[in-house]
Image (cartoon, rainbow, N blue to C red):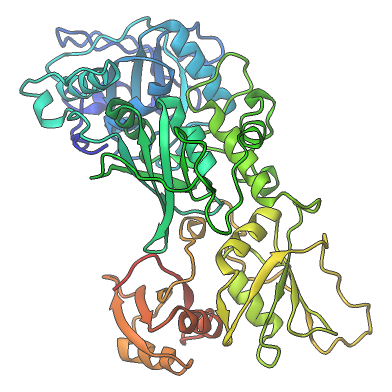
Length: 545
């Protein structure tokens, strides 16, 4: 949402407390949508408690329970996929807003869609219902900023130059200079593929080319539309959105490039205008018919993506409401299919069991594997194979966590050896029979207090990154100094290149000289007791010092 002023309260006359009584707001069924702010600014306001199900459809929608400091742009983005947004009234003191769409039909589609798929703003679920008023009348002087944003959005949607003026010139969207977007995926808890991006972004125009790559330990992509206006529309609607709840957040900017040069059509890059391009060395050729059948499917018939994960329904999902499908309708279907494609090719695709081979059998233990693989999911059981001690089976909480751990840890160095991680044919890891001594090669961690992802919505879901030389440290007591931590980490067998405390001293970034050293330090020092019952928390960081 670059270029838009987001910190100005709009449509609020005098104090927001005047708009409705606190008792009405605190009522669990209160909707406050009976309020009208008239153009002449008088104090005639109607207040009526209405039940969402009893209220007749209206093109004015009432949005409640929004997070603090939410911007007009974020509220408008909720309605953009369904049609033109014609007015907005922000009640920032009450964490509410009113949104007026161009037609009642668009509003019905939006409500139907968000009934099936809970809308989220800044990872917070919000509530949307019909207002009992047919249009939103706002004081134009007080609502000037919101109108400026709306005019800018309208200009983008109609592919015209944004309107100039005193209010608009400060915050209107400037015409896009490039049809190429730079996309960064934050908090990538589940794999995001090139095909998923194509499905999501193609709802805003013709996607011509995509290049994906990893930079600064983050998955990134360059995506080229046929028209700069389509790129602007996609950025406005999708920037900051999650592909899945609480993870896989889209960060979108315009690229300085105006054209992408794609040499190969494979799972890393694609030129949709030149299907004859080769796949490149060692890359599987792309079969368009396979892509279409596996990713497009029938959105209304697709199951919720990663349903075994429980808490990870799609944020950019779809409603099973027939015609009530938004421009994001195929995103969940695409992502779900991509998840299955990524795990497919073997009948045990839903297995949460990994086979790890080429381990250093002199050094590896069930505990060390539990700690490392626990960065990417909750490892339940670990078994080092009795007759092949350089291999182990690790049972994760579900198939998605197994996929995540495999994608991040396959090919990494552990105890001096490059490990190989693949999906196992086993569905579970068996514990040894009672009374049988297996020399401590099998451990059950089901009830371990060290699981990072047991709590739904935990912040740990938002801080999952590939192995990197920079480590994030937390739960540091005030008595511990930089020198203490440097010494502790150097004793794990590596060299500390850089260190930086966060302002509150409870967290820090520490950079080892190599990724392998950082992996070793994490295995050795995660949950290390620093005294006063402060157990150090260690994870990989996307930052550098």
